[in-house]
Length: 438
Image (cartoon, rainbow, N blue to C red; front, side, top):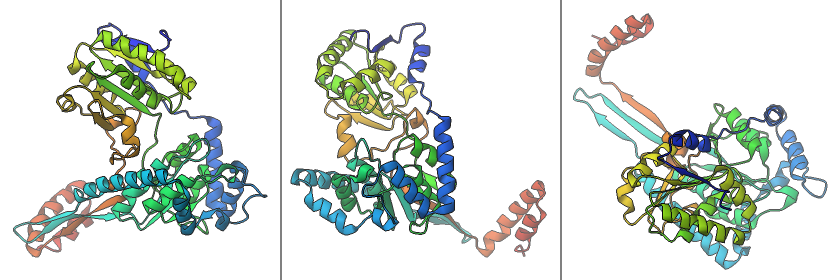
């Protein structure tokens, strides 16, 4: 195990180069996937429901000869409520608590996003109006894993924003419906649930079919086919982001139980082999203790082989000079999840500019944020936290400028606009402004 996880020291001459190599990730552009997605998007755009049915029956292995209509693939509100009633009490209560906390956070977020207007001395009124999108599509993965938490995180901010129609698509391989996912949809206020997935679901949401109205935006994670399809339909509709592998960066001062830190590293490494888990600490002895905890705890993990590969390929324990340098490196990494596991975390958080979400203090494990703290767990990855934000109410709104020019305002602004328009060679623009000048 000692040789498994990379160990770096910021004092090494080649440290920056080795860190950049470790962080490097480029989404695969498999030619076969790109070609297949291109064909599926075009086919669904042309043939609509018939193409969606064909691909769903083929890829999801729908039993009993497959679905013969889109109606057979839709989950009714009654079925969602039945799923909510049928799941164990503990699961239902956990979903309800998580949903309440997510809703409270996003309602508070909405309060900060109200529009504004102001009136100038000459009576001109300028401002901004904030309005929700009409219709959004939420992609929820099916197959190997089911993610009711993702239903809450994607649907609730849309609902809080005021989106009237929230269409959820979720594949059901072999016809198996996950009851917690349906229960989460009932709690989150999802309008329609259609059991389709893959590139064909993205195409149906983007272009519309006989039974699915085209949406304004598509959000939610998926496999390589879904990511490729979202990338290709961007511009026809909005998208949230193209998510990369999950990441955790822990900045530690050496005071947290090393077993806790090792398990926090595991919590992201277990997602998949490409996930990344990195620890920064100025205490070499503490880094050794965490490494020992990794060795001890790894054999107890059901997904130990995934964790082992993730830590071996993309994980690291990094010795830094001090906590200030740790914060500087954290800003360079711009991680999806940043834990500051220190006695006084706020003083170090004040130095952080780039992170998808910050978890402050030894009791703030990233896993709590994944499920029930309240802030959204859909976060920028692959260093995009330098310019991107968590999914939020603002992703389901758009802003319109408000411009009311008074007669007095037109006298002043008309001269300015005309001067600039003549300078750009746009005479009609200039005359349009001048005609309103007395």
